[in-house]
Image (cartoon, rainbow, N blue to C red; front, side, top):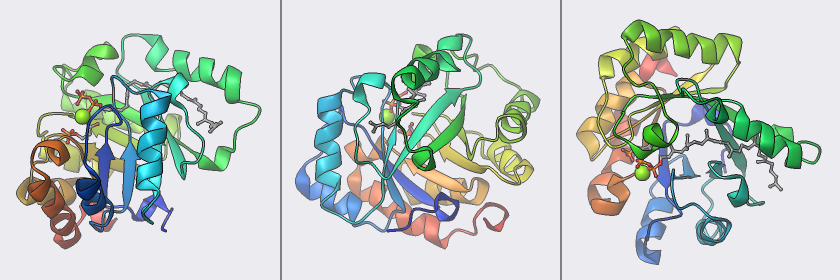
Length: 236
Ligand SMILES: CC(C)=CCC/C(C)=C/CC/C(C)=C/CC/C(C)=C/CC/C(C)=C/CC/C(C)=C/CC/C(C)=C/COP(=O)(O)OP(=O)(O)O
Ligand SMILES: O=P(O)(O)OC[C@@H](O)CO
Ligand SMILES: [Mg+2]
């Protein structure tokens, strides 16, 4: 198992609130992806998260929980990614929910397992952007400033350009990854096969594939090889 996320180029995001058969899950876990990220913006519960973790644990692939609900924090993941939505208009998604969770877990947690993600929501139609009341009408300079804020002010190991559901602006993604010296740029949104995966891998450091697992698994699986063969952003 490789737990150094600085080497991750490809990640599959599995949603505990969606159905995936055992055979399909096996193909995802044995695909050669660098990690499975468990997360979703709605319907995530303790029970469906435990269930998915137990099923992924049959395989060697690293398994990370992207925390979106305090009630669904389940022990036993390799790492815990904690989103901070930088362009939310509502402070509960920037520090509020994190503060509440730390009141409960702060004294007992293993900080070496915690990775902060500086999220920039970029698809105003996505449920994640709606739930978090994000300001998604951003200029390129706005996005660059959020990325610098995440890396230089907040020291987030991960900056996440989130287009969930649509394929984003690769020129902007590439520009932002070029600005980052320490943080890793995760890109997610609308990758439905190898062609878009290759483009995203040339622009971002790490490519996240989510929804297509559920509607076109064959094409989703082909993204792993496509990302491996792509040049990679700034050689990272
Ligand atoms: C006992 C034990 C194991 C202790 C571990 C310690 C630990 C992990 C403590 C947690 C500490 C902590 C600070 C937790 C934060 C808690 C929390 C609820 C934070 C809020 C996170 C947040 C801003 C959520 C908003 C939504 C969001 C950004 C979700 C991320 C995932 C995402 C965008 C998924 C996309 O979802 P999808 O369903 O595909 O949606 P679309 O329809 O938009 O595509
Ligand atoms: O579901 P898609 O559009 O692939 O996006 C992946 C991920 O960024 C969602 O949080
Ligand atoms: Mg999704």
